[in-house]
Image (spheres, rainbow, N blue to C red):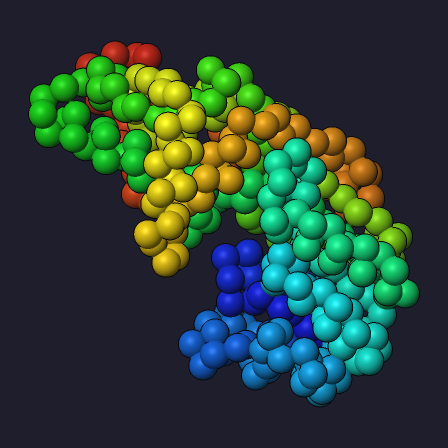
Length: 324
């Protein structure tokens, strides 16, 4: 199948393009800049110069690609959905997969929620053979913008403890732990999500369906933090701090930084339970995500944060770094 991919130069895009190649598909990837064109070319796709902000020209870009199906990885939170849908219809790309997010279920008055829900409605009413995938928090490789930051923090704490002659398990690391760490999280590994994207585009029976794509089971935020620490061969003591002042400080940070690396809404979302059924994806897409322990250990290893395996004389309980 010849696939037209938007968002191919992004984090998820790299995994989707690799998986598409592995399955024997060819890909044309929309690229807004020369740098994006180089990136998608390096990932095995044919670059197609185009910009989602240029809605008037998008139909020509899509038609010129001469593809069989659309894989829209670009965010639905920027108001591009009407132009994308119109262009897909004009290019006769009847089969289409769109990435949304489980964040549309938040109770917070997030500005992007209304935009994304309107985009989903536009897709549902389009007449396309659409599939919408709603992933949870995505992790699994450097640049995931979520757990890689946490792993780097824990890795620095471990190195600081060792440099100071302190055992790794004895260094307190103050981290915001909303709700006492009891709120539920269900992160999805980026490679598992990429597999779901390709299976969805390949299976006609997935058309007209919306699937939540998450890890195999929810875990508490405290358990997530413990697993991340163990993945770094550390047992840092996590010290809960009140969430309200963290949110206030983050809002101040947002006002003075042009491109903030974290937003207050992200902290607020951590205080909400995020637990989703993946039964429909398991049934229709043969979706079988890896455990969080497995995924976070692999990510820590890629980041170079795993300690060497313990020596024979070391304590038999210090085995966190012995698995790849």
